[in-house]
Image 1 (tube, rainbow, N blue to C red):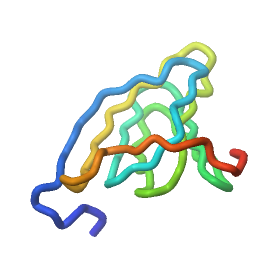
Image 2 (cartoon, rainbow, N blue to C red):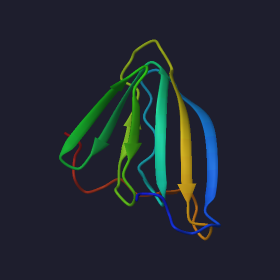
Image 3 (cartoon, one colour):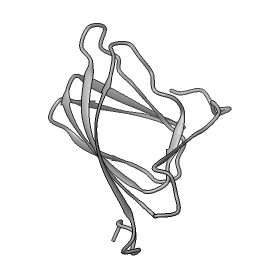
Length: 104
């Protein structure tokens, strides 16, 4: 029920790394995205909450919600595989300005 009903939806599979102590940009997803964390740690910062994941976890990030990923580990890069399903007329992500709220 969470997948777009558009048969022309774009699918992307991406291998990413987030270096130790680094933070991704603030962004929103314009479609469904699932991640498999292969190595390391990831913390997702949302308004009012933080979610923590470790190697072997599979997680999703909500559509249209401002957030960013942080690698809290001081030495190990976080390695992830992302599976993106986005309507054909939209980019997979949209970078945003920093929100007015402060992450927890």
